[in-house]
Amino acid sequence: MPISEGLRTSLNQIRETSIQNDTLYAKQIDEISPTTDISVLRDALFNNTNLMNEFMNVLVQRIIYTQIVNYKLFNNPLSFLEGEQMPLGAIGQEIFINPAKGRRFDVNDFAGLLAKYESDVKIQYMHLNSDVQYPKTITRDKLRNAFTSWNELQSFIDGITQSLYNGCYIDRYNFTKGLVAQAYRDNAVQMQVIQNPNTEALAKDFLTKARALYLNFQEPTSDYNAWRKVGGYGKDVLTWTESEDIVFLIRNDIGAYLDVNVLAQAFNIDKAKLLGRVKYIKDFSERDKDGNVVVDGSKIIAMMCDKRWFRIKNQETTMDEFFNPNNKTYQLYLNDVNMYQYSLFCNAMLFVTEEPEVTITGLEVDKKDVTVKEDETATVTVSTTPAQANTPEITATSGASGTATAEIEGRTITITGVAQGSTTVTVKAGNVETTINVTVESAE
Figure (cartoon, rainbow, N blue to C red):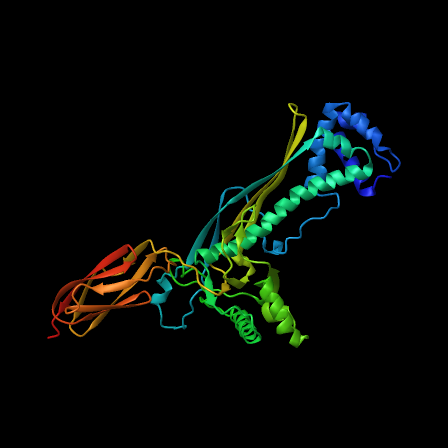
C-alpha cells in the first residue's frame, strides 16, 4: 500500500529538522518519495539506535505534539470556556473594579475638588491546580510491527496520538464540568431551588424562570454573583452579562424532556436567543479516573452563567520522551498544566432540587455588648465561618428572658429589653457558639 501524502510530508519534516540541526539522520535517511518502500526506512532505523532515537524524538515533537497527522480526538464540548494562556508562575489574580458612583453636579461644591474618590477594587487570587501527566510506553516489538507497512505506521502514530490527547481532552472536559459541582458543594454560587421539571407544567415553569434569568443577567445587579455570599469585602459587586456571553448548561435528561415536550411545540423558536449558548451535559458530578463520584452534582439541573465564570487557563502542554536502554522502550509523556477555578465576580446561577449543606465552623457577632432600654430593641448581625455555611441552624437564647428576649431571623438577632438588669444571649450552631452581653436600662 503506497504511503499517504500526510504521512510522507510528516516523515520528510523529520528529515528537514535533521538538516536544520545538522544531525546524522538526514545524512543517512533519504527523502521519502511516493514510491519509497517502507523497508528502506525500517532497515536504516533498526540498524542504528542513534538514528532511531532521533527519529522518535522528532516524531514526538513534530507529529504527535504539533498534531500533523489526522486522527479522531474527543471533541470537548466545553472547550470554548477555556481562556487565554496563563503566563509563567503559579499564582494569578482576577481584578474587579466596581462602576464609579455618579453625583449631581453642583457649581458651588468647592469642597468636592479636594475630596477623595477611591476606586472600589476587588481581587480574587487564583492558583495553578492541575498538573497531569499522560504516559505511554512503546516497546521495540510494537515499533518493529509498526514498520511492516506504511498503513501500519500510520495506524501506530494515530494510536499513540489518540491515546495521549484523548486522555488529556476527556480530563479537561471533566475538570471543567467539575467546577460546577465544586461551586455547588461549597455553596459558593447563587442557587435557585426548583422541582425536578419532569412534567410539562414544571418544565414550562422552569423554562420561564430560565428565560427571565437570561434577561435579568443583562441588567447591572449584584443578585447573581457570589462575592457577598462568600463574605467578600467592601461593597457588593455590580455585574452584568452581554447576551452573547451567556451560557446555559443543562443536564441531558432535562434538556431532552424540554426539547420534546416544550420547545418542539414552538418549532420556530431560536434556543440561543431564548437562553443563550446551550450545551447539554450527561451530569454535573465530578468523577475520578475510575468513574467514582468525587463531588456529587446529582441535585444540579442546569446552570446559567457568564462564560467568564469559568476561569480556565493553560500554562503548558508539552511532550517529553526518552529511550530506556535497560528494557529497550521509549517513554512518552504528555504534560498538561492548567488552572481550573471559577469567578466570584461573574454572573452565575444554579438550578437545583436541593441546596448543599456547608457546616458552620465559627460564629461571630458585630456587637459583643448591647445596651437597650425596656420595651425597646437592638439588632445584632451574625456572621459565620465559612461565610456561606448554612448548617446547623443558628439559635439565639437569652439567659434570663425576664430581663431580655432574643429572636433570630436569618443572620439578624433582635434583642428586646423586658426589665432592668443584665443577661447573656448565647448564639449557637451545633457545637459552635458565641455570646452577647446585654444590659437593660429603665425606660424612665
